[in-house]
Image (cartoon, rainbow, N blue to C red):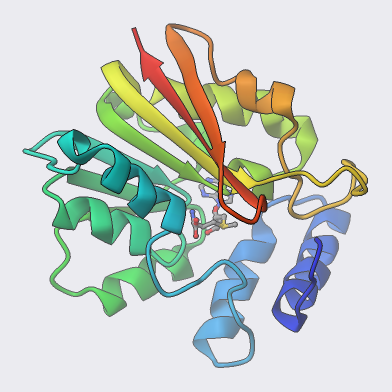
Length: 221
Ligand SMILES: C[S@@+](CC[C@H](N)C(=O)[O-])C[C@H]1O[C@@H](n2cnc3c(N)ncnc32)[C@H](O)[C@@H]1O
């Protein structure tokens, strides 16, 4: 990571232990658990919806009214994005592999309209296949090692309904960063473009003003 904070370093230490023991995901539960005890910070918890998600709705006001359309946030973590989608009128589902993340978000939003669940991106319920008008993938795929990237990409893609939209938000991979080093394992341009398959077409990729984050938009034909 560039501009590494102590929260990032703690997360990276937990991830390294988890990967060394053969689990690419166990560290998320450890991190949320430690954060719940006040012993760690969640590096990706900015306390608000992702600015590139809010900016997309500002740029596309016709999309900012859910009107009962369906939305899902894989690996929703602290849940700020899923809460925004529900507040706009999307029938919103969100899931995370870390049970403590799900417990924490339910506790933070006891009256939430979001259907929060513990679920694994690699074992999605069959009824979710092709079921969501808006899929928001924010930094979850990049949090997994590259050797599962193709499976993760296909799993995200499988959630999009006919006529639906996939928004992909992540960190730009700096030229000086070794792509093998992570987390995060930021997506290369070709890994971003790989979401554009099985009927999904890339509409465009935008970066934020400082060139640190991107948002790619895909639409189902
Ligand atoms: C870097 S965080 C991003 C969280 C949130 N999307 C955001 O933008 O703030 C990645 C999240 O994905 C979750 N995650 C990792 N692997 C997963 C998997 N296989 N299935 C579901 N969630 C997963 C982690 O627990 C974590 O909450």
